[in-house]
Image (cartoon, rainbow, N blue to C red; front, side, top):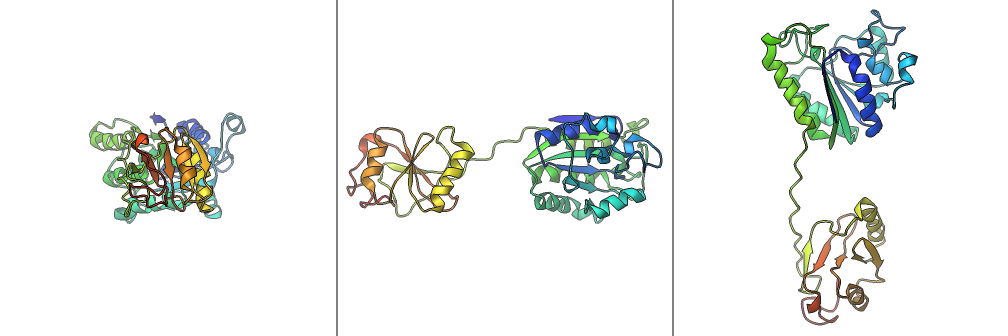
Length: 314
């Protein structure tokens, strides 16, 4: 993951293109007073810092486009706080239904941003912050200030909302700090810290609580567990399990191998498959899998014997 800090918005072209190649379809959350959607032909100034997003969309300088490893689609863009668009930029936003979240009402901005990310079902995001997204009263040290921007606290909260709404933040950028920002150092540090925290490793979620079975569906020396313990099966194994489940067909897991059983009451076959191995047995519907671990293979009871099985494993 990359944190790009400094320069104007043009420095974001390569980091965003790289992130898009590594995480195809990621959201690009663009905190900026400007849309940066001009082309060389439409730009009033000719300055490239007004063209990076359009370049990432495939409409930039040809000599630069041929170097990019990937290109964006308009549906990947989420603008936050943009309020100074040139007419060609506004036309592009309108004709391509690009998401544009206004600064007001400020209190709802984090929730509105989270909703937009979840609606797009994005698996990752890149977060760009041009400091002119802030109102000049909060941070005036920018190249192109525009009235009506965000307060620093609102920007920090909205940046944090991205981290809560997507599984991966692929990168971040902080640009357009001009002059001597020392008088506004607390504001600058707060924004930089919020972006950096997006890129820190996230703690693992707590393990799920063990499943409770009442009455027990397996012999007493089996215990219910709620994690995925079968080796390197991963998502491919889960997808295979789902196919069995949708057909309401039982299976026994031996490591990462799946062995089907003709019917749930076929206790003899289940017992034979278990042998003396540390084997997991699964039964569920839909994708809500249940697993049982054999705590004591030597204590296995015969089908129909004691231990709470009642002669049928399910």
